[in-house]
Image (cartoon, rainbow, N blue to C red; front, top):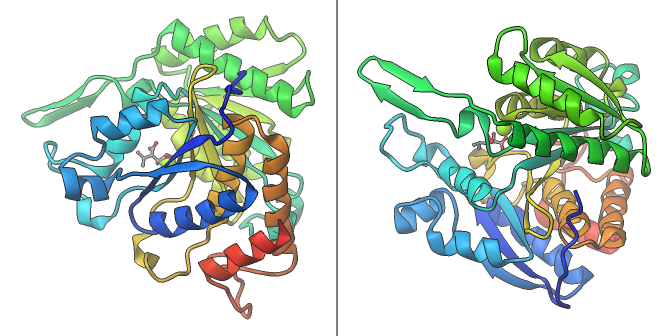
Length: 360
Ligand code: IPM
Ligand code: MG
């Protein structure tokens, strides 16, 4: 994926803080970006807050603005206030799905690399997690998330559909990512499916295998999703790039995130065709239980801002500065409550942000 955009001197970034802790962590990331350079920010409602104001999670106006921006930075959406099983009631998640579809963001990149200072926080033994550095490449605009669904009396259905074209482009995203991570050529892609049961998975396996022919330098293997879930726990350090469909990617990326013991640390990028703006967001949710208390961990949002600079704006050196500053504050022992071990005194969002700004 060649995503670097031709961007004017002050890139336009749409900020979608969303719900729960979203506004706190996005405000912190804005401070960080302002310390790095000139940006034009446009802050808008999306998610539950937009339902409260406009009765829909994503307005056409906000979607248009996002399409025209250079990049979009999102906090998190959702919360108990908007939880419902009523099929006709608006849900915050519809905003996120609407953005993905409406912006054509078919490739979701979720890197999982435990910060060296946090290896002890993993639920796995240290020798097992040490050296883990993997990337989940999740298909984001197809499959069961976007197929026909509905209810008819006592029966409900959700349909999973994939086309050859959809599988080809996400496969290429995976192979390209493997090459990039290997420094230009090489790397290893593991394609995950359920080809022993699902027809969409058999098509998936066939197409990924064919696309692999364009990347003879990249190693490819296939795993069934249940087996992949197991292997991720038993030998996480042996994975490089995992390419998979929408629903499997949703599940495996949370599992991978938990391997690090610090879900609050993981960023993500959602990318479309070359030249189109990307969407960048932390993997963790809106954490309504701690919202408004000034204790949210802003680091995953900082690392998402780093992905925005690297993948969205073609500014890799500033991305590296953010990543190094985050590693440095962790090395110095600063911990937000979600990262603090018993006996460690945690710091809040502002103190963590100040420390990262200082390291920059
Ligand atoms: C994610 C989330 C979303 C998804 C929800 C909030 C719709 O879990 O980004 O992984 O399922 O894709
Ligand atoms: Mg998820």
